[in-house]
Length: 102
Image 1 (cartoon, helix red, strand yellow):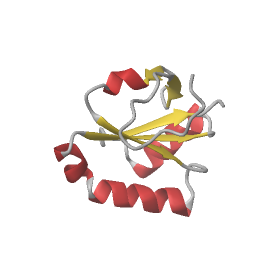
Image 2 (spheres, rainbow, N blue to C red; image 1 turned 90 degrees about the vertical axis):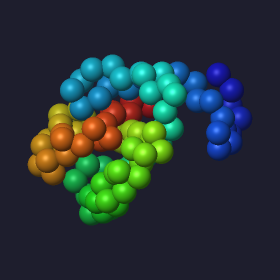
Image 3 (tube, helix red, strand yellow; image 1 turned 180 degrees about the vertical axis):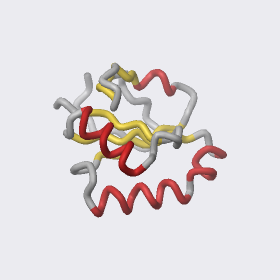
Image 4 (cartoon, rainbow, N blue to C red; image 1 turned 45 degrees about the horizontal axis):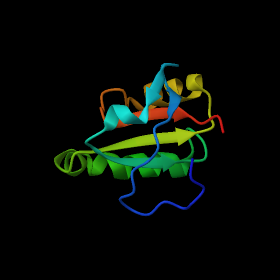
């Protein structure tokens, strides 16, 4: 794997992380789509909630541009699931929350 800083438009290496359902979610599943990897500090924080409100506000535009947002933090899969259920995000197909293990 290269240690060079990627540039906008560079192809990302394939990798997987566990999603909120504790299942492997591979980046290549989104091949052919624009992908935003959104790294955030912690579930259920004001910043995270504000970012989601903004992403949700522009959900239709993201979909028109064939774009998916993958949320990544070090929180547990259970924390992600609780956050999604609490905020009722499960109906939003753009929301995927991955547990970062590195």
